Length: 114
Length: 111
Figure (tube, each protein chain N blue to C red):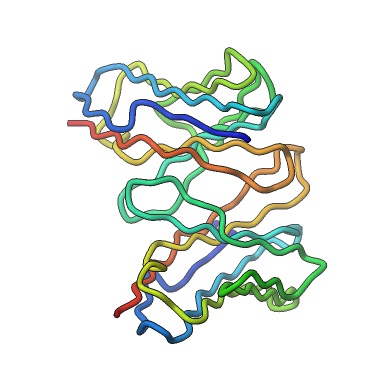
């Protein structure tokens, strides 16, 4: 039972254009969502997050949108740069068990072509 | 500032051999600690997590075990490695806010 889904395993965009990465979740108890970026053979690095009380959070070129009714979030990167090429993981957490576990999607590999 | 260390960075082990991966966190106290595995072509799978010394929760039944002998030390072990244990192992920590920071990872190849 996959609670966080990233249905696109890969995405290719041209430098300077917008990259849109999508993520869907099924558990309505999730109230905090994060995006991580991962290069090969490295640990994931935190990119941006959003709480369920908001529908948008922006940080420089990165914006995350949350649609709670659709249980859907997306990450927009504008403009895309070749250095953005990496695997992007969507993650979700809820206030359960006190452990603050994150549930990750399987990731989307973004390739930004010069 | 907080930092997280993992070693070794890479490891090649024969099937049936034991395993010990170590993770330590600096600059914080009483963190939640996590072990993940990223298998080839797959996402991040949570293996174990710990909210305190000696407290371990296992997420999936498997050939691995974890221990937390000290507040900021988390160890992943196996008595006998399987081919399917190959992957990229990541340690992470958090202070219970939902936000986790990851270590650099260990690439394990079981031959």
